[in-house]
Image (cartoon, rainbow, N blue to C red; front, top):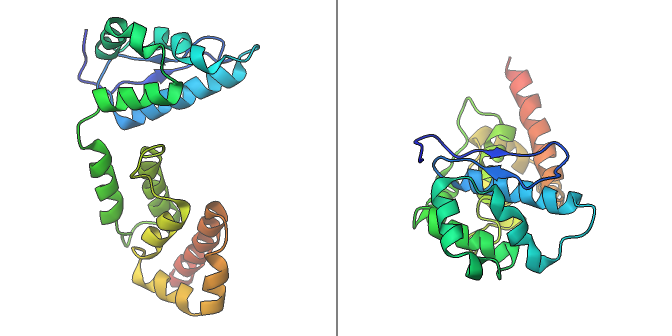
Length: 194
């Protein structure tokens, strides 16, 4: 029975059984959440699950009507895939044709707004980019930094460019540290305005 709600993921607290992808509309977010839950399930197994058995260990958790029918009808082929290839197959089969391009376009078109903190702006961009992991459109940390920096509020941009040497050092930091430093500058600027 299909639903017009978004598919969700349910996990056993100790990851003792495969995670469940519920009935509903299959979205990039739902598939990413299910994939992450499967990785937790594999990692929590008392005995390591061989790569060639991972897909068969989790397909029972696919309670989404459309996905479960597809898996049942293609079980022999799908169970021979690596988990990464299986996830790629699910993306190709159950997501809209241009979902990855649309997601990348959303990232490239995003601009920080006046009422948005730097941290929240980054979180939106990074969350969208996470859907693209493993595919050719996923942006590297360097490319994400460039995209974010070029689309932040002008006053924050100018503040960061006041010291080219500090900016150069800032840009060598790992992504999360880079984000935290700029977030601190953004918070200080916001407090100074109040």
